[in-house]
Length: 127
Ligand code: HEM
Image (tube, rainbow, N blue to C red; front, side, top):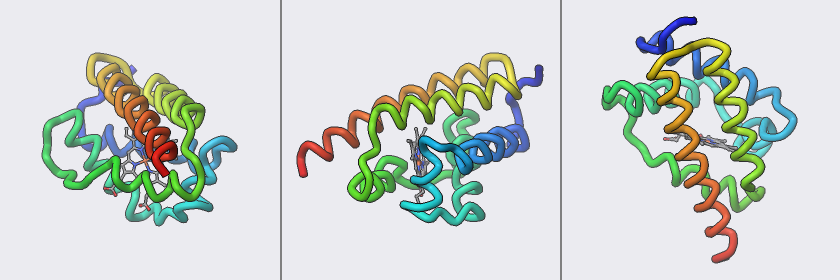
């Protein structure tokens, strides 16, 4: 299986992941119906986000947590949604890549998803 090592690999990983997400019964509606995501803008942002996290190429500037709060106040983003997000992400990586960077992509995403899940839950309790 291929190593995860280039920007093109990141693009493939992100495209395959959001292909799954977009048609997913558990979390697809957040993107399609709640946020009504413009995929042509979202996908390039996600390429840069992952390039920054994995390769240290500082191409993403933004606040990844912040964009999720308004979504969470429209429809609760629950722990089970994040667990499902991580499942789809892990599947996507394992279907396409192996090696240290692939493991790092799973590890970092899992940590961020856990933190995000916690922050969304806390935000709901405060409002
Ligand atoms: C159930 C889980 C999740 C859902 C439903 C979700 C949904 C979304 C949606 C709808 C957007 C687009 C917002 C917009 O442009 O209007 C977005 C943006 C984003 N998400 Fe998530 N997300 C989830 C988990 C995650 C996780 C775990 C990460 C990181 C590992 C992440 C990273 C990002 C980033 C970097 C952006 C772009 C932020 C920016 O505009 O700068 N998301 N998410």
